Image (cartoon, rainbow, N blue to C red; front, side, top):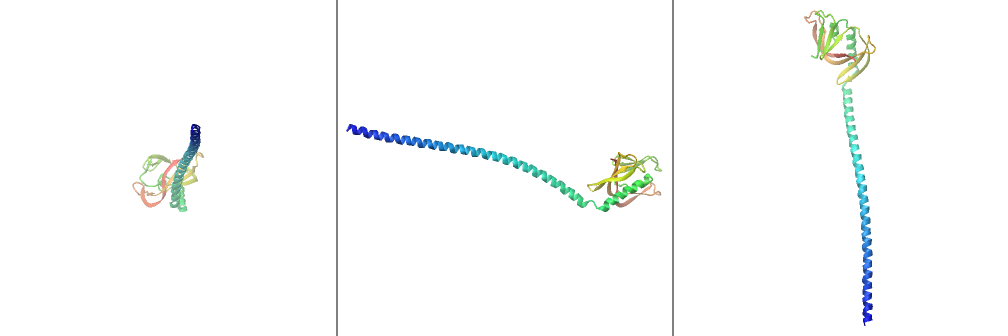
Length: 213
């Protein structure tokens, strides 16, 4: 009887031990699986963070490039707009013709015929007879008029509704004259007038400024 009881007790303990060992292995395997899942998730998170950082950098670069392109497009639109509204060949030809007439002037009074009368230009000369030295004062900057010093046209460009003409100098090959041309009223010589001029209300291409270039 006792022997049978011992045998029965041993079997029960063996079964419990086996169950314990099996549970231990199941728990260990579960822990290992969870650890592996954790490592996989850590790698995924790290990879996603790197991708997100790369994506953020690329997004910032694209935004900067887009901004630069926007600025360039805006500038090109302004240039195209200026070209569309300005300048026709006849305008350029008239502006050049005005400077050529200015070049041919023999006296300071004749030269005045081609200057824009817009309130920013004044005149000064040695005496009432118009003897020189004679000066144009363009917005406060003096320019001495001398006959036969302006040479040939070397270049031109447009700038905000104005025509810029560059002429060589007859006296100095290293010097040039820049003429800023605008459409404006002017003066015309009238020797019978007390001031020697009359107002010319016709708007045409006239000289707004001359300076050495």
